[in-house]
Structures are given as C-alpha cells and as structure tokens.
Amino acid sequence: MMEETIENAESIISKWDLNSLFYKATSLFQHNRKEAQEFLKSVKDLQRAMHFLISENSTSKKLILAQNLMQIAMKRLENEFYQILSKNRDHLDPESVSGRSLGGSSDSDDEDDIQSKDKLEIAGDAVTEVDRVSELAMTDLKSIAECMISLGYGKECVKIYKIIRKSIVEEGLYHLGIEKFRSSQIHKMNREDLEQIIKKWITVTKIAVKMLFFGEIVLCNHVFSKSEKIRESCFSGVTKEAAFRLFRVPELITKSRHSHEEVFQLMELYEAVFELKPEIEFIFDFKSTKAVKLQALSSLVKLGDSIRTILSEFESTIQKDSSRTPVLGGGIHLLTQSAMTFISSLADYSGILSSIILDNPQARTSRLPESYFESPTSGNGSTPAVSVHLAWLILVLLCKLDNKAELYNDVSLSYLFLANNLHFIVEKVRTTNLKYLLGHDWVLKHTKKVKQYASNFESIAWTKVFSSLPEKNTSAITPEMAKECFMRFNVTFEEAYRKQTSWFVHDGKLRDQLKVSIAKKLVPEYQEFYDMYLAMLTGEKNLELLVRFSPDDLGNYLSDLFHGTSTSGSSTSSSSLFQSQGCIPH
Image 1 (spheres, helix red, strand yellow):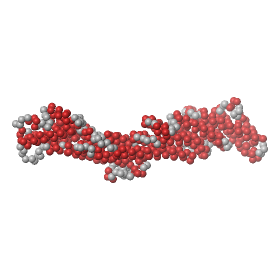
Image 2: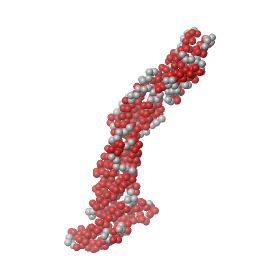
Image 3: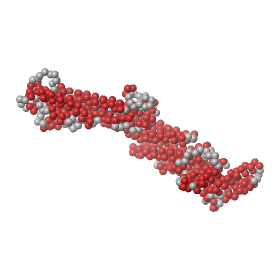
Image 4: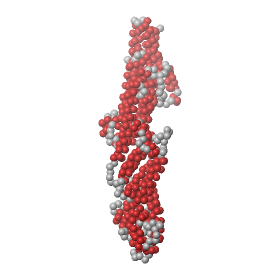
C-alpha cells in the first residue's frame, strides 16, 4: 500500500517537476487550484510512506524514488512560494493586508483552506477583486509554508520570505519619502528644511506603523500561524532594521541645537511618537524586536529632554534680558510681545506639554505661592502642571517688567508702562487658550492690578495739576491769589499735556478709560474754580493770557493724550497748538 502511495505521488509530482519545459514557467496554484490541493496531499502522503519504509524496509528501491520525489516537490513548492510573494506584491500591500484582523494560529488543514478560498471565486460580488486575490495569495502562502516547515524545509521558506518582504518594506518607506539620515545631515539643515523633514516624518511614520508594519505582522502571523518562533524570526528580519532606522530620526533631530520657535515642531514630533507608542509596543512585542521599542522610547525621552531644555532656556532668556533703553512713551516692551506670543502658543499644546512636564520630577514641584491659583484645578483638586508652568513663566516676565519700569525717571511713566504691559498680558491670556489653563480668577486678579497701576499713574501724573487749584474749603481768596491759581494751572496742565501726548497707551479701551477717569476728576473741579473766580478778573488786561482754558477746552485737550504723537519734539508741536488758541505757554 505504501508503494502504491509513492506511485500515485510520482504521477503528480513528476508532472510539476521544474525541469519540465511546460510546467517550469507555469504556476501550480494559478493553473489549477484543485490540482494544487492534490499536490499538497500527495506530498504529505509521500512523507508518511517514507517514514514507513524507513522503519520497515530501509533498503527498498521505492525509498530512493520517494526521496527524489520529495526533492522535486520541495523545489516546486519553494518556487511557488517565491512566485506568489513576487507576483502579488501589489495584492499583498500593507493597505490590503492591514485591513485583516491580527489572526493567531489556525487548526484548519491546508486542503480546507484552499477549498474555502476557492468559494471566493464564485462569490465575486461579495468582495473586491483586490481583496479576493489578497485572500487567495495569503492562503496559498500559508499552505505552502506549513507543508515545507512540517517536512523540515522551513529554512528555505523563511529565507525567501525575509528577502522579498524586507525589500517591500524598504521600498514602501522609500516611496513615502523617508531617507536614511545621518546626524551630520540633520545638523546642517536650515530651519525650513528641518520643519519639512519633521512634517514628512510624522505623516510617514503614522502610515508606516498603522499600515506598513501592522500589515507585515498580520501577514506574518497568518502565513506562519503554526510556529511562533518562525513568526518572530520572519517579522524581525523583515521590519527590524527599517523600523529602528525610522524611529531613530527624532533622536537625531534632538542632537541639533534648536531655537525657541522650533519647540513647537519638536512637540508635534513628541506627540506623534507618544500617540503611536501603544501600537509600536503591540506590533514589536517580540523579544527580537525589543530594540525597536527601546529606540522609539529613547526618541520620546530625548524629545522630552530637548523640549524641557528649550523651555528652561526661554525662562533664562527672560531673566537675563539686559536691555537698558526704556520703551518710548511707556508702550509695550518687545520682550512682553515676544514672550507672550511664545507662551500663548505653548498653551495650544497644553495636552502634550503636560505629559512632557510631568515626566520631569523637578517640574512637579511648584515654585508659585500656594494661594497664587484659585482655579483651574484637576480632578484631584490640584492645579495642572502645565498651568503652573505657564503661570510661572508669566510671573518671571512680570518680575522682569518691574525691573524695566525702574529705568524711567518719571515715576508716573513707570506706572503707565506697567499698566500697558500687564494689560497686554491679560488680554493675551483672555483671548487665547491660556484663559482655560490659568482660569478666570487669574484674569480678574491681574485685571485689578492693571487698574491699580492706572490709578497710581493718574494720581502721580496729575497731582501737580490738581494741587494748583485751591481746596474747596479754602476761605475767600483775593483777585491776586486767583490770578496765581489760574497761572499755576496753566503751567501744570500744559506740562502734563506735553508729556502725555508723547506717551502711549496701546489698548484703545484702556486709553479711553484713563482719559475719562482724568476728565471726571479734573473738569468738574476746574469748572467750579472757573465759575467762582473768573468774574473776579473781568477787568484784567490780557485776560486770555491769564485764563487760557475754559472747562470745555480741557476735554478737547485730554482727547489728545496717550496716542504717542509727540516725542522729543513734542514741546514745539504743543506750543504751536497753544499759540493757535491765542495762548503763549509760560
């Protein structure tokens, strides 16, 4: 019976001998799938017959024939395995394969697999052509692999698989636009080129992880479902080198020195690796691919370190700013504008920035007073780390602005400078994502401080003007005293006017609030003085030189304030204005 089995196997195996002129160029699995099923069955029957003859009749001539037939069969299956992998590169592409579930081992026989997949040819409308061809190719590869491995020819099968699939992975990354970068190349790149590399890397890596590498492990798990050791060897051989090289790019990027502005690209890079980390750990879970996981983790750690270094340097830059030239007119300092633009942009990355900050044990300890924050708080009642960090950066900026304010010789202008800059900061917080991180209480608290600065400015800047008028409870004054009061008012008001037309309030609303506040205090008080003592000077010669301003004039003059329209030449322009009113300033 065993000899008969060998004879039956000889008929079909010899037919598909690669030395046959016709069948050498023909694929068994494409030519006739039913015959392919019979071929695999015959090979397994041949193996059983060989085992029997070895144990019962080791000198049988049929054993030699069987061994020769087995060599012919293995060369055919090896060729079929190669042809299916090569000719179905497009149908075994990552997108087609990654759409399948990540299957494990299968207990079904090769023949059953082929029969079930044959039905796909009939049920054409149920699946797309690409899916159908992909399914058939994967089933045939699995059948051949399991047959060859069971007969001790797994080494040949694995070698072919690794060579072809590795080339597909490398080709896939090449077509996606990823080059083999060296650290020196990245170091020499300008900012624009580096930004493009980072954007491309993020896009490519998402595709590589979710499709290319995932597709490879799906295919590998399916084809070699009955051997975990071979699955690991094949997947590692196919993907390890390319994946390691891909995940090393972020680490290479961190080795270059980066400006503050480049921190946002680094955070996008960090976010991409952070989000892909669970999938990377899942896909590269084999012991032999541990180096890939460690490289991805190393890149993540190095990116976090680099980002924290940039943030620390940014804080140091604020603290070390040594410019000694006061901003003309008490306007917005360039440091305020640049720092708040950077800090508000950081708020747009609050989610990932929180992870980066929490990874640093030193950053978990707040340097802010406990009462600094009343809101917002996290679920455990504490203030989020990212909120604390950004609030600290703003506090560092405010402290530096306090020092800048001391550069002004005029104390009132110092307060105007502080009001201007703090108002700018509060508005930046209120109109960006900083408002969610610092909270409503922070905005209210610092808005009150702006009002306090404005009040201090008003009090100091206008104290001479108010003191030039007699107090309300002053007893009746003589015409001579009234003349002196009008003249003092003229001088002090003109001096205040000259100064404050050259000073600047950046925000229109704050500017109007200051003007209204000054007018509400000054105009009524001057109106009362004007109405009470003007009649006393009716007979005076050159009355227009003594009483230069009517109460209505004051409002007009106050409207000119805080536009920064005059600088060092403000005295001339102011004189011209007063002269046009028929007045010569003293």
